[in-house]
Structure formats: structure tokens, C-alpha cells
Image (cartoon, rainbow, N blue to C red; front, side, top):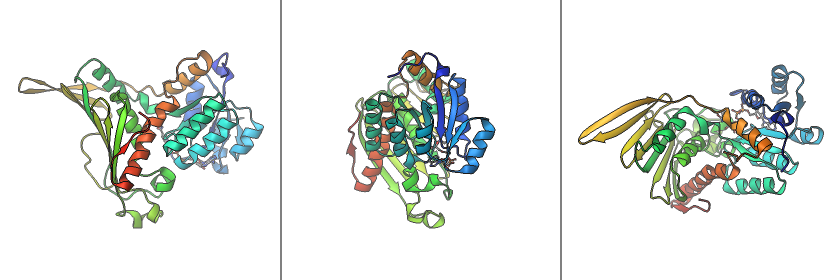
Length: 343
Ligand SMILES: NC(=O)c1ccc[n+]([C@@H]2O[C@H](COP(=O)([O-])OP(=O)(O)OC[C@H]3O[C@@H](n4cnc5c(N)ncnc54)[C@H](O)[C@@H]3O)[C@@H](O)[C@H]2O)c1
């Protein structure tokens, strides 16, 4: 793989400059912060290309990825488009010899991830995923407490997200575009889980309920599931659950709960309650979450390309939550647990 002399020598671009969260601007700014040089934007919506030009005057703009790959020498591309386009666009870029940081989820199926990883290896380029939430304050805080032995050995992780109400009419609520209710936030929550449970995935069970909201969204039969749940079994004996719901106004427990042999962690965005036991007495210690450090993602990518530092979000790491999600979707259809092919 080509080693760059300095981060400034790495020219970077984005595919997708969407308006929902202004993620194209956020990526280019973070890449710039890591010392890399913004160079190009590809977007199929001409109005969004105008916004990109206003944000980054002089940046190259393209109406298609094929045109960009033909005309631009840009070295590294972030793919920031709807989920079902990630694999195809990444393969196009990797096979054109460009490094790729694909937004989460890396892809929808394990097979797509496999093809992307093979293309990156064949073309000797980097493939990573924008798992910026790897460095969220609450997971940084939880990992510190777990490593310090605050709750003993990890037995169970419960993550959940959702509420009650009709899903929106955006692409995130189309099952065939998003991958389903489990994928958007679920992939972040599973990435937290895999940090916490440092063990091999052995088996996944998935459950899904559909139809309650389908008639009320523009996607009809293709609307995301109303409620979905999965369990993961790990080689260490630990297990994890993920719930994503549009049917539960009070999803319990709080966003992230870890049960250990000597205590529990119960986390929300701001604090982590460390619950331990002294004899018959339950002791709750509230620890504020540290500040998030999501900027470290592109710093690590730049250090990898210039100094050969190990990539934190390797494609093999990013494939793990996708493998769980893919198995859960298949398991829900088949009504049985499925063995993992990748640990
Ligand atoms: N990591 C995070 O914290 C985070 C936050 C928000 C979104 N995301 C992820 O970012 C991705 C995009 O989400 P978003 O909220 O920006 O969506 P969005 O709908 O705002 O933007 C998507 C953009 O992609 C463009 N697009 C679609 N196909 C294209 C193609 N072939 N070539 C060029 N542009 C194309 C669309 O025109 C649109 O402007 C998703 O994978 C989502 O999960 C991640």
C-alpha cells in the first residue's frame, strides 16, 4: 500500500452531501482537522452540490461517481449515502484504486462486506467505516470502568432504542433501502456491545414484527419492521440483546446496560450509574461520561496512511455488527437461531 509522506498529501472527497444532518460537511471538516486536504464532492442532487461549493469554495464537484473517478485524482472517499448503495459505490471506488471510509453500516449483508474487503485487499487500498461512535463519551467511560474491574466479568449487555409512533417517510424507514429497523442506530449499539464483550460471536437469534405502521407510510409493504429484537451468544458465555422499536413508548432498560459478575453499569448520554453491592446494601455511584472523541477516527485513518499505525475501525471489525444484523434478519425469517460464520 502507498505510504503518504504527510496527511496534507492525502486528498479527500465525499460521495453524498445530504441535507438530513449535513454529514458531507462534517466529514470534510473532520478530515481537514486530521490534516488531510478536501478536494472533491460527488452528489446526484444539484442543489446539494451548490451547498458544497458554498461550504468549500473551489472544491471539485461531480454529478456522478463514475465522472469523479474518471476526472479526479482524489485519494480517499467517504461514502455518505443511503445504506443499500454503500457496497456498490465502495466497490466502484476501491476498484478504481481509491481508499474508502464508508458511513455506517458498512453494508447490509455479510456477503457485501466480504466482497468489499476482498476488493480493498486486491487493490491494496484502505477500507474503513465511519464508526465515529466508537469514541462516544459513554462508551469511553464504560470501557474505562470495565477495564478497571468495576463490575467484574461481563455477563450480559442490553442495548435498545426507539419509542412509540409512526416512522418518518424518509429513506431510513424503507426496509429495502435502510436494511430494516435494526440497521441505522442498531449498528452503533452493536459496535458498543462488541467493544464491551471481548469475545467471539457464536450464535444469533432474531425476532421481528411488521405491519402496524405499514399502511401509514409511503413505503407500504417495504416499511421497516415495527419492532425487532435480537440476541447474540458469545464464546465466553456472555450474551447481548438489541431492541429497536416503534411500538414501545418506554423501552427499558436505559440505552445501554452492562451486567457483570460484581455489579452493573446503566448508561444514558450524560452519566453512567455504577451499581455494586456491599453485603445487603446496593451502592449506586453516578459517574459523568467523559467527552466524546469522534475526531480520532480520521486522525487514525491519516496516521494509518502516513505512519502505518494500525487501523482502529478495520473492515473486519466493521463486518462483525453487520454479520449479527444479517443473521438476525435471516433468523427472524426462519424462526430459529443461526450459527455465526465470523467470530
Ligand atoms: N455516523 C453518524 O453519526 C451518522 C449520522 C448521520 C448519518 N449517518 C449515515 O450517513 C449515511 C447518509 O445519511 P444522511 O443522513 O447523510 O442521508 P441524506 O439523505 O441526508 O443524504 C444522502 C445523500 O446521498 C445522495 N446520494 C444518493 N445516492 C448517491 C450517489 N450514487 N452518488 C452521490 N450521492 C448520492 C443523496 O442525493 C443525498 O443527498 C447513512 O449511511 C447514515 O446511516 C451516520
